[in-house]
Amino acid sequence: MTEQTASNPIDLFRDTSQAILNEISKVIVGQNNLIHHLIVTLLAEGNALLEGVPGLGKTLLVRTLSQILDCSFNRIQFTPDLMPADITGTMIITETPEGRRGFRFEKGPIFNNLVLADEINRAAPRTQSALLEAMQENQVSLEGETLALPQPFIVLATQNPIEYEGTFPLPEAQLDRFLVRLTLGYPEPAEEQSILQQRRERQKETVELEAVLPSNGLLEMQAAVETVYVHPDLEGYIVAIVTETRRDRHVAVGGSPRASLALMKLARAQAALSGREYVLPDDIKAYIHPVLAHRLLLLPEFWMRKNLITEVINTALRSVPVPVLSTPEQG
Picture 1 (cartoon, rainbow, N blue to C red):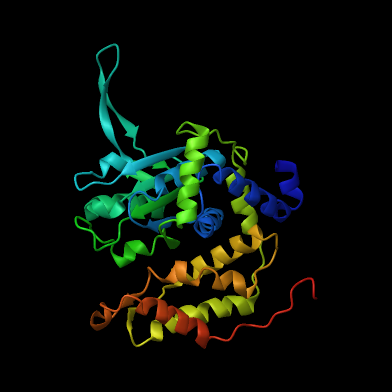
Picture 2: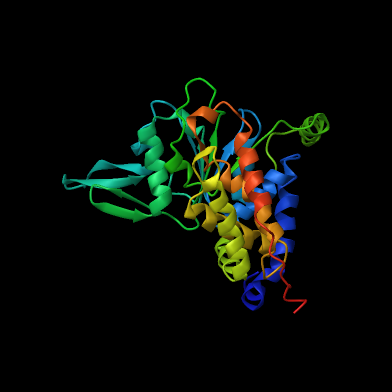
């Protein structure tokens, strides 16, 4: 991949993404749209929040991605008694053969390329903050020592629906750290039967997977995404949509500038995955809901209207004219 990537990195995106999907299909049945969104999020160097009830294969999906992308992986099960040090690490006492004592930093499970924060909303806010601060800074500081997290570093967090008992909803400021929020649904009956059939035929739990990318391959693809062109009119299109969410009469807090940046990042990654060196309006539209849905806060009198945020986003999308651009091929 390396020599070809240096000449024209975008050319290989489509083949690579298809190879990733082929490997994932050995383990995961269905969820094609979700998997596509996750791959785009990884290419955009973003963290993702996955929402859905337990038992839908979230852990399996993330572990499978880590194997295919040749990334180190760890899973952190969030519980009410989980402490920040259980995530980031802690100082431990050491003793030399001569009997001298000192301290050594013992790294926590966060020191991996791909980290699954399972059921993040079951932990206390203080513990949630420890993870989210590390996500923001890309480093961990303890007792005056600062250690950089490995690159790439991506957190895929899962949460149960907020109406479940024993959950601590993530504050809006922390939700904003996630590039996207994606929802997992139950498989279709035919897909669920296919899951049973696959398990019966292979006669074992584990599946042998091949790494599609070499070491540092994901970093190379992420760097290539930065070369994708975004027309100034499309930048204005992104800003106009996000601005409309702030003006809506139902909304207390609209999309932030971070939301605009997230849309641009994802649109570039989507374009690259489609084999293009430039962004189209449809690349932006594809990620409007995943980017904005968890960032908008309704006024208290509208909290009970469950589908209102979707309506607000659709209204913003309809109210902004789509720029008419000529593609590079059209001149």
